[in-house]
Image 1 (cartoon, rainbow, N blue to C red):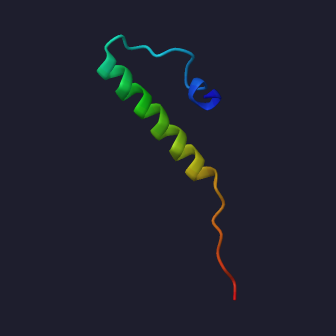
Image 2 (cartoon, one colour; image 1 turned 90 degrees about the horizontal axis):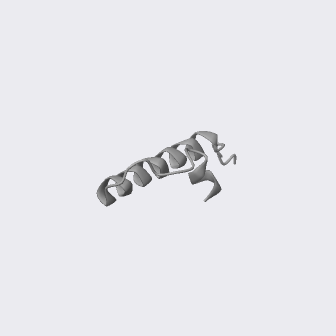
Length: 45
């Protein structure tokens, strides 16, 4: 939840459909940032 709030404390939209879309966008951004920050692990053998 802390990560979700880092993109803004409040949801800007008042329409429930737009609120859902806004949350989906925030979650997609968080997933992308996590993906960029993960190390690539390769097996050596």
